[in-house]
Length: 286
Image (cartoon, rainbow, N blue to C red):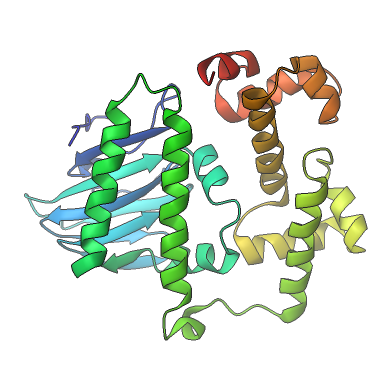
């Protein structure tokens, strides 16, 4: 696998790359909690160590897999000299697009149960998936490289979601939330799918739900672990990328269609979330 320098966070993709495929001893995380802006799928190939990942504490060994969500706190202790993982890491925007329609319960469960021990066909499937990802990682001339990677991440998340949500003990680890809270959240997601590309104010959705913005924020945080604004931004960003990739509309026309005040405002929004201008993104994805 591709080796990554340990001086910096070995999992962190660069502004030029939305994802990385590699191997590391993760010594960067020794005895110190580090917040990871990226997410990652990791599999331990050899050795062992004690891991703290947000609220999870445990020991990982060979054939343990880890699904780390973007924004997680990671630290390692008692790492053996031969400890090694292979990983696929990705920027938050890539994860947001891939996980947009993944069940919220799955995301919450992964947050508290991020480590699994794989055996048999499950281990073979993960190994094959990592090999295919490495192929795409090295195929830098492929015009659809980022889209292919996003689709492969989404497929993997859907597979994991299906397996997790069918676990016999799922009800015992499913976070306990009131029916009212879940209903409000589901209605918010429905509204977001309908209006998200044009309506970016939290107050708009709170008014539609006949609740306060503070209560909506509390519900969304409790249900998804995210902020209302970040979920709205993800919808807008996804729609923006689709329009840039699939239409010949000018940036000004896209700004009008998505209810931005002007082209400059759209440009600042897009650059903040992607590190690129809309034009640069369009040119790199044609």
